[in-house]
Length: 146
Image 1 (cartoon, helix red, strand yellow):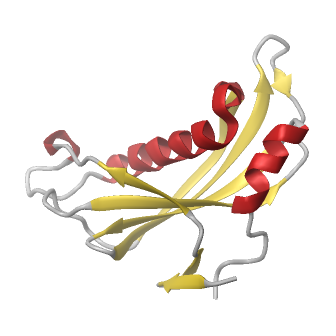
Image 2 (cartoon, rainbow, N blue to C red; image 1 turned 90 degrees about the vertical axis):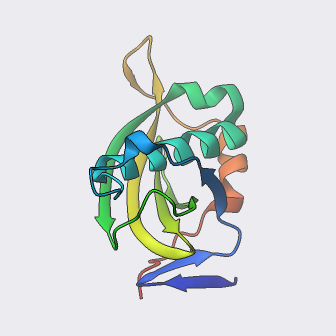
Image 3 (cartoon, rainbow, N blue to C red; image 1 turned 90 degrees about the horizontal axis):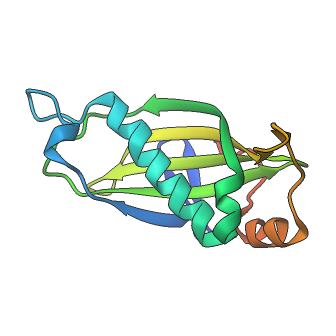
């Protein structure tokens, strides 16, 4: 598999790309993106990725973990996009990796865990065979750090 290296993260060549519309409200007084904006951008990309793969099943997900490593400041006028892929698929959860780019330079690394969840029973539920099959092409389950 081909991978692209950015900092210490290798992005798979088939990672899912989401272009982000940066809003003026995402910035501070100096025109830098607020750190919280990276969380919103990763959420936007994560939800678009889930909807594309799982369709209506994407509504049965919860976020169990989120961590962000900031790599550089981003200014309002920089084009931003997020790449998303799956590191691991478990029985009820999936570990995701995301990289946020601005002007093609790595701006943040994001790790998250999503869980298939039954909101009526209020408990995790196993992935369906269809969901697992949709996720497998985006799974790259080895350690992506160099």
